[in-house]
Length: 196
Image (cartoon, rainbow, N blue to C red; front, side, top):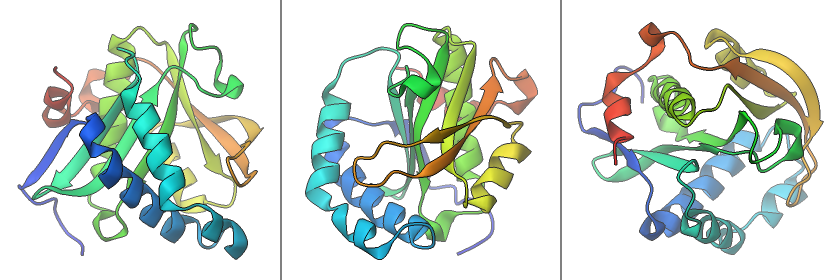
């Protein structure tokens, strides 16, 4: 599927009742996205129950600076982003001024339509509103298309990182952005989704 984003797209905050859908989506898209970078044995180890437990816990934590946004196409999950205080020391301390973008996944059939850009820009705006001065994410060194995408959105490589798991120790680059971004980069459609 290619072309413009359909008008049926909705962007909203995730709720605890979304945990099962996010877990299934995360598993499916992670496996497809990392097939070229991860040994087959590792791909098979990441299962639905693992992801369901993770997302049930993640969405059950009440933290006003922790966010998960969903993009839905006619109620079908097509992408999500999770961001907030760092969960990994490579990004600083939870009480510091640097945030972490923990997950950004777009359905393979919806990639290239601007959804990743919309979600990242919404995350940058919300993080700036939450008082963060910088943000970063880890991207597998071999994922050249994702690295190019982040560069195109103004990201710079600021370090290297070994991701501790849960099941695969990937060699990553850390991409970072200063906040806030210039206002001409923000997406008002997605920004409205962040309003409680």
